[in-house]
Image 1 (tube, rainbow, N blue to C red):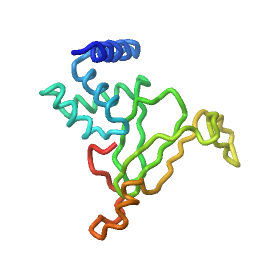
Image 2: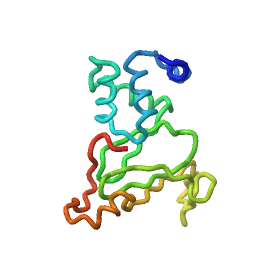
Image 3: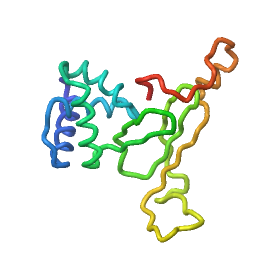
Image 4: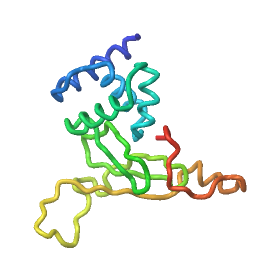
Length: 163
């Protein structure tokens, strides 16, 4: 492992411990996979973890993701019609762009620059802490493929592993 890899492992261990969780090889592998593949689904994370820590079960990946979300280490996002995804960018109130063709997800900074970004016309007694916005459209690659008659039609389902 090079110096950067050792530093990443230490920071992953520190983050897991700081969240009050026990450090395990499965949790380290899940956190590393998430750092490399933002917006990944549990199944896509499992595919990566299986390579990093053979013998880790899908249930262990789900458990680690649930523990991380509960401890505030990761955020769950679930764009309509797509599998739940996870990301490690948790320290701000950003939003997402989702491609309606391939399912690619990208971060977009807060639309007005301050949380909660948007203010509803009626508060109904709520005190706002966050706004979640999803922008839908076609990514550049899918838009470019419009000239290709063999390209698939719009499909809001995601090919596993895309991020």
